[in-house]
Length: 435
Image 1: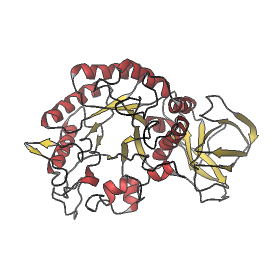
Image 2: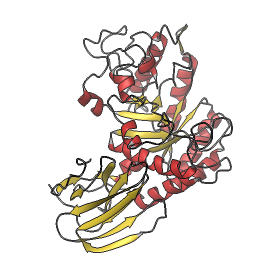
Image 3: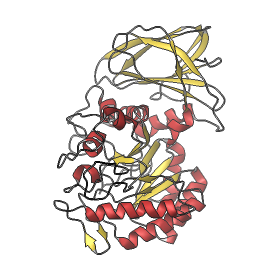
Image 4: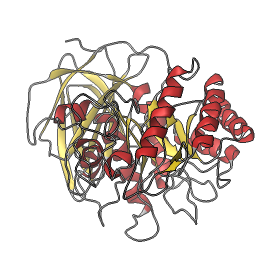
């Protein structure tokens, strides 16, 4: 995705990613199931922000599932339902509710227990103990996977792993794997299948202030001393040091989601709304660029009890983060259909280590090059150099609106100045390039 700092490389063809894939990675957590968020107002917030999927919790009643289906019918959003401290009865009810959602086209995935290090899990009469035994967690997750893949309606929907389970397991039941491989030395047998996707809660707010390259580092599959990500959950577990995917290449290729992350705008070490808005754009971009298929920001709406983490305030009015996300998703909005292949031959010169880029294509063939800076202070200037014939380039800044801030006619060089977690979207008119 990026060239070395200061590089002035010759343009080479980069394959574009369907913009729909990026847009579908934009997700958030809500609390409709707990009666905190109103489904109709949630639908309004989703339609405005462009958030595509919702994680909700602690309710699988028929009435609640009906409400989710109604939100889906209004917005197209899909859902995953999770519980803290589930038991056998919840497992059965969760599978049944997920099946109803799937029939309506409203199911995104099934997910295992939420943070079993904080809430005990009961399975077949045994209850997990956070500092002694996670066997009930392992057996619960294994059974969820078995039932989902045996169900003709659910089998094609992914199963997300139990969040925080691998890193926090006190005994080596193998929750640091999706499927336990030969030679793992775990208490559960080789071949035990838990999930299709690794699942982390890589909260980005683990520093007192925003730092350089924060979103990019937070999405890393490798060791970073301040993050709670793939390495500590699936590489070498943070609690007991059980080995999982010890190869960097394996961790990078691991199918993965983040079902909670974010930074609040009130409370200890909180951000200004401006800084939150800029950081969350970089977070979604960096997570997707580094292989996260879905990123759920905690949470959609501010709540005085659970915190001011949201894109909208308690009255469902957009904060800066909601406005900036609306602008980003509006510029990139895609009518759908199959995106044609192809890419763009380009390079970025004079880039700093904090400069990143992502090439997207719409179904109609339009190319959008997103360039963003994760420099916490000051500014950086780069030049995008295009191969081939000159092009018309529209430049958008999602912090200012949904219309171009500049249009360059028939150019092959695009100067871009970025300050303080800035994002620029370059719409490139003209045919795609081929390798």
